[in-house]
Image (cartoon, rainbow over the protein chains, first blue to last red):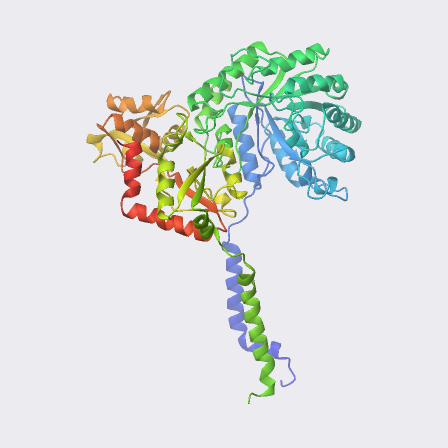
Length: 375
Length: 262
């Protein structure tokens, strides 16, 4: 016995206590809540009388799978047939060429399972593809092929599930290039490289150019360039060959949706002026995807309207698209929900609170798209 | 004479204490209050487009936050100097040290507390029930609306709250109107029992119609507070103490009442 190791001796003497401790640990393991099991569930289809209706979701920063699924269920139940969603390049593409598809798989698979058409916006440059200490939006010509590789990998992976890819965001703003001086011709270079790479792996997916910010900034402004001028310059640089459709951002700000458009005015029907630029360049066959539209009802934002106006303007705008804009494939409202409150005017664009409580506008849109299901 | 074997222990203890004290020694001295006092002016950032809290539409800056800033500055022995920003630029202005404090009807935002410190709230801008004054004893909050009818502005926060409460109390009927004033008008007309409106709108409307009252319990809480940089602890403490004194001696209530009730 004297030669027996102390640990074994201790265990022999104290084994009843050890059993009790082990039992307690096991009990703790059993009483802790099991992780939420989320499954895709049966495939669903969207029931809607308004197939043009879409919504821009904000799932890139939504961590929990059940919230991703819940969001997309509520989108379908509202009667929206499509989503626009951001898939940040910087999140998923590593310097060694590897991809982390876990999160985008969740979003795409759940959206597809809910019967939703998916329009994917790609942007945000990984740090390995831009100079040190440059902003997240910075992208210069040396990174175009890397971006195109990401877009091609994305298009290949989600063949048959993602309908279209939007190349970059609001390229007519300096901010969206990390304040690098960039012209419309630079953007068309990015468009061409992306189009070529994507079509090589997935010829069926649509490449959307543009997604221009509605702005009246004059030539030479450090902030950006008028979207009508920029689109004209895009076409002059050959954009028509490298995109299958135009993504459009068109906000109503303080004006009602029926208000006539004018080049020196930012209102909802500015989309019609962008269309005129397309037609002038012989691109009348290409569709328009409105990937951001809407009104805001923040009590302090200078471009906001009253909550009731926001509802009415939104419904009227959707009617206007249906009745007068046959070339619009999708009219997606900015935006459905954020994972957490932003506590800024952005919260007042949403249709649903972070806690999944539908705002009254959600019910009104639902009543329009799925009569009998709204408030 | 100490034993030679103990010397390393004492040495390690002293070294440990020095290491513990090092971060404090390295911390930048907080001269935020002294800086304001030396300058003789408290630089206050605000967005002057939000009456009755701050408004410069008529050339002269006025409002609750303006009066509050002047009163707080006076308690610090300095003058308030106002710097205007757009609503979205306020926090950036503070972060880049263009101003000392923001007093601009800003709601406490827990997500910003890494960079910014908030005072105790000086006003709750959340939703309140507007009722007939005679009903004050029987309607103290949303739970008392069972079997009653409430009016709200269509699509507003009040509308959202009413819809949520409709699931918690029985037979709550909701009427939607184009504006909050329209909703409160229906209370006076006795067409509904209550209206939901934000605290400011409710107080301003009640000012015209004293036969109306606010129910005792707020429906939601939206606390307005002063904001400083988180490292400016001395300035925030001085402002917070001054605000507390204003609350204790009734000066704050008098200030709010001057703009909202009289």
